[in-house]
Image (cartoon, rainbow, N blue to C red; front, side, top):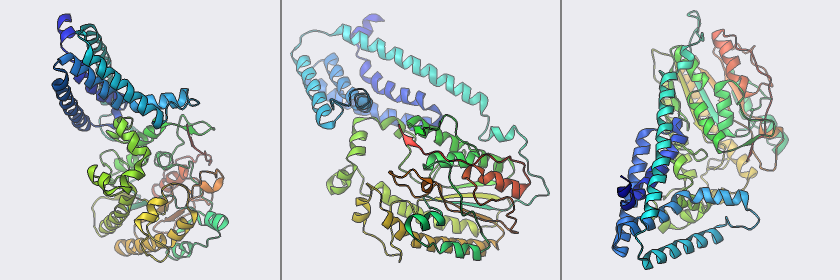
Length: 498
């Protein structure tokens, strides 16, 4: 066995297998096995092709495997090295692309020359790498198996938490369809008036349609994933202290919390059909639209690779150059895809409103507006893609304000069509996940959000003007279904990336 490990460079394929399985073990709950299998296949094929190329150069299995592994190690672990140097040696600037990439290139070239000139068999190095990666891989496979058993023992279905408690709606309560609309970064009219001297005419329209406005509403967090995780679970997020410093793991945890959230659990156990028209996965209802601020699925693993880091930090170059855009199959900037996504969601919501269903439905639609990108001006005229992309960096309040009248026109169209198609029998919820954000502003304005509700029958006694979003579904379920959810203290935490 030892002799085989000395002379067979298994490590050349163990490296990509370890890289993928380690990522899978680390984020088991949020990555599906089919995604992992696909990524593993791609990396193994690429590694094999590179190894065959070096086999032609070196005429030696060990040397070609070592050179291939060195090259792939730089590709796989570049992000980890970059982050380590940036955190632990920021003063000398070793993490900068202009320094780190040439240093890695020199190291690879030196290793190539050494392999080319040496006559040694390098069997000890081969043995060491084989054993090392087998140990690492074994540990990760045990971790995956442990997590799989733990997951299966505690989650027999999508909504096990709800099925094990007493969240039952009385048979005497009506179960209306609930249309839950998030308009990303839509600030409250009070905030728009005080911060930008903008008079929002949406209020008068909503009041004329018998909506109740919570004018002093606030979100609990200034970031979409955290705000949605808190709102949909009707609680504050654990592990976030008053400093508000959050990291990558916190963002990933939000994805899990949204997927297995309490609101859809409660509604599912009470006979509601969940229709997901959002950018987030819900248990049993995956997202049908792309989003750009959370690393999901295999992107969680690949985001630290060399190409992913270069693409992230020099994204503008790929879209400014038509050849690069075509080469990497990126003819459209991800931000510009939100335009089509918004239109698709609008159409699907209208379509759903015309359907007569035997079961009550919860329709969650997440519109990426009036959040950047600002696709239209106040008159509904499309803005040039070049201008939109230039606004990707920085804050542009004038474009934001100019976009709101267009967004309001779509909201008016949406509300009127819904009330007509449903004969005003459905609950309609319009919320902003947070207020308008400015990286230099941590005031209350970043939390002041749109909050408007239509209840059939107009019973708004349990809604209150200064509610925060953590209490929104508590008051809604208490009103609609005679539940007894206690209200939490309203507060907001300003989040900062670590």
